[in-house]
Length: 125
Image (tube, rainbow, N blue to C red; front, side, top):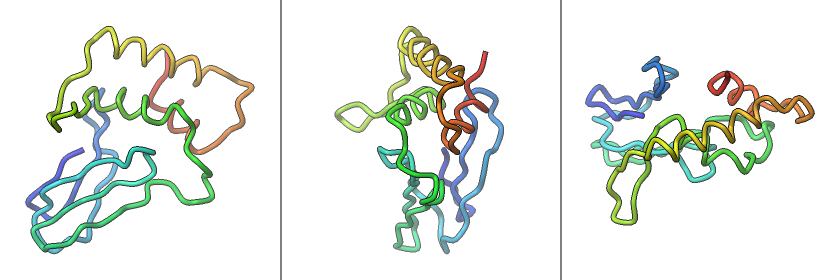
């Protein structure tokens, strides 16, 4: 995810660099953007002295599954450490997360949800 001087935040696919969507609505440069811990929202902060909370999926999507934090780690390939610094995930940890997510995506007995459709779109063999 990136924050921008053009009054937007953008969400990208880490693996390919493809732009997924643009968040518009601030009236000043967007200085910060981050996912909520549950992965359902994005919060942005702007020079227009506002913060906005953006809902990623509608309430009808239900509660996020327990694998959502791993999914965001997998996509971003980074995390914040206890000092708030961005650290790249170690390759062996990323591979472990990828295999766990692939197993979930392959599970045909799991009920189809918007979350599972997103997972299957981005994490596949």
